[in-house]
Length: 318
Ligand code: NAD
Ligand code: UDP
Image (cartoon, rainbow, N blue to C red; front, side, top):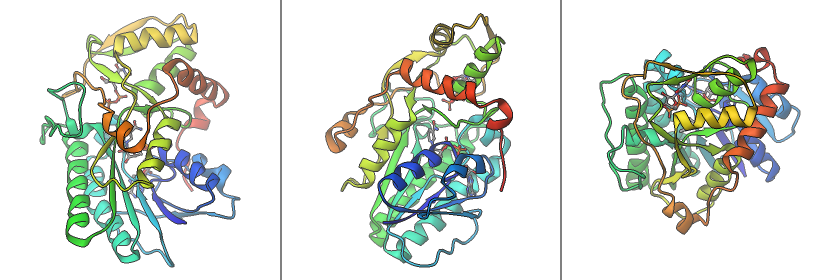
């Protein structure tokens, strides 16, 4: 198949591109490199079935020829990134998703939206099933991301209902792994970098807020299965192994053997207090469940971070 992958030079997108190429597909990676890096896809550049187009998907998207699938991942994803780019985040979730859906409609392609557990906001239900409508502050600083993704889900379902586009929505929970950017600001790269340098691990708030971390290969498998399925309603893909951020910091200390101490810093505004995916739907409809445990996934990520000094993990533009 010929696949348009927006956000393909990002962390998740680059792993998905690798998988799609390995499965024998042709991949057109479209990215404006706002938070991604050309380094993430440099190893794919020589592949005959891989093409990179530098383009901002909030502008009209033109792709020549047939397209079978549109996988729409373009969007800043880390809280630090979307707080730095609030309007671009709103625009890529709204205008960018509209344009990507337009390509799918025009080409008769199947469409996948990379949505997020952030549509549940600061959830009052834990774990979160797909039926939960969420608890989002639309005017808080995180609202630019949460509401952009909620709009993106709404317009995706509208294209399904009104135009008959075969759409899929994956609600991705906290995912980590190789190629997360240095200074991306998310907790996994922060803690790993701090541990390796022997610097203090910065726990925000008292560390009692919870998250559930999934390794990137599990996410990619879930996305591929959803794309190949007949499922059109949103599906959570995440690892339900929930822990407090303080316990996570302790685990990073144990796994890396660092002598770093733990320090406490201010909690960001509207930081969700709990987060854990209910994955019954993914299990029942896709036969999917996570395979890589936290220790194994973190070890692989630490190994990659050690081999790639910070300048190699910084942004590189085309
Ligand atoms: P990332 O920042 O590494 O990748 C996003 C990519 O999108 C980047 O390469 C960026 O340059 C590109 N992009 C952003 N705006 C664009 C635009 N207007 N035009 C073209 N390209 C643009 O983030 P990621 O972690 O790989 O996230 C990928 C997708 O998965 C995002 O949609 C994100 O919301 C979603 N997601 C990720 C997680 C996670 O834990 N990694 C969790 C929930 C949802
Ligand atoms: N966090 C932290 N220290 C850091 C970075 C993040 O304690 O150096 C916390 C953050 O406040 C949140 C959790 O870790 O409670 C996960 O943050 P991340 O930015 O990775 O993603 P989020 O789940 O908030 O989107």
